[in-house]
Length: 246
Image 1: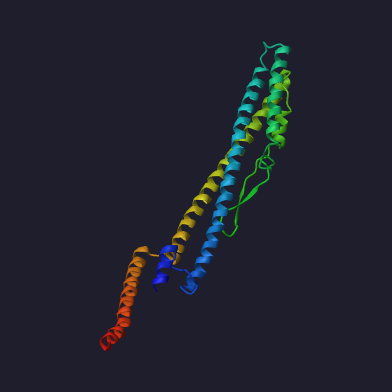
Image 2 (image 1 turned 60 degrees about the vertical axis):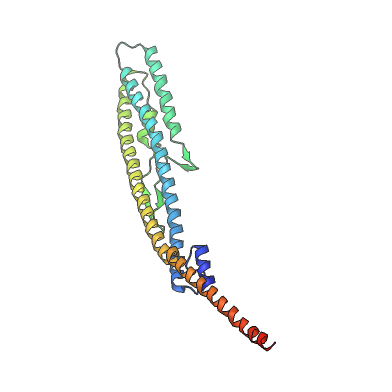
């Protein structure tokens, strides 16, 4: 008992062998496995949040570009602007369109950011998933806007209509990304709470009560020392009788 108590105190676990609590050990093993899966799901959720935040970071710049393109579309309709002035406006407009088309090809660790594909993110230890809404910068609403030109007043009018449609679509896409991040945040909090509760339950099964076990250790130690002293005295009695005979 003294050795067992010492093993529990030194290991911090009250189950140092299956014989100590076979049923408790079985439950603890399942809890540990579930906690490990929860950690994996939490990592997946965190990575999905990072992906969505990266998407929104790009879309903020796309928003700035579309806003400037709409401004250029209106400027190009100024009756006081010459053809050469409109050509300069159109050059900037075209450059911004090229930038947006380039953003549409970006990826996150090899995963396309703007292909429009929904990503299924694992949200619990049983690998259930949450489908995030995808964003497609290659959609016709965007490509029509970026392919427009403002080199003439008529083209500028058409371009403005196209850009306004792209801005409306972009607002929807950013709202969807915001919803994705919010939902994933709730899932992450839920996983954290579940892990804490499971860890507490597992602790009650396996972790040693140091105060209680220290008391037992002191008790067993006193008994061992007392027993050793009594045995020493018992062994000394025959020697005393022998000395009397001598």
